[in-house]
Length: 95
Image 1 (cartoon, rainbow, N blue to C red):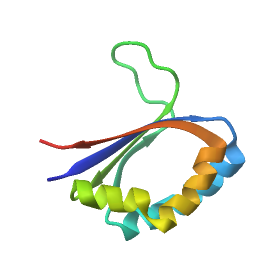
Image 2: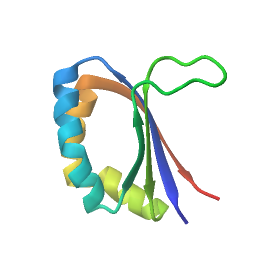
Image 3: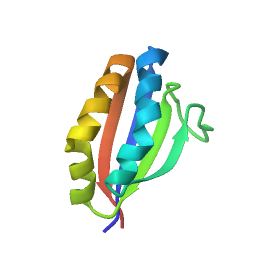
Image 4: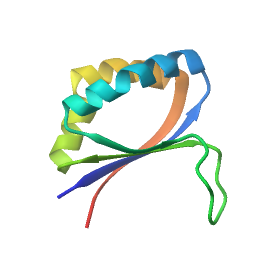
């Protein structure tokens, strides 16, 4: 079953976040992930929005998503994401 990882990201330091972004796609692809959305200015249709970047990724399974998230390659680049932003990241299986 497809599993989705969604993040809302508040970027506060572009330099480390930029390093993270530059290294992100090869690591995501290495673990079979697909980037579906990456938008710093999503269009709000209803309710308040806090201005965070919206990111949506898809994986073949929950296990694949967790393998990517815990991989040494991702944990290494995530150091720059953590240094340059604050994120809320959630995982959900699809229907």
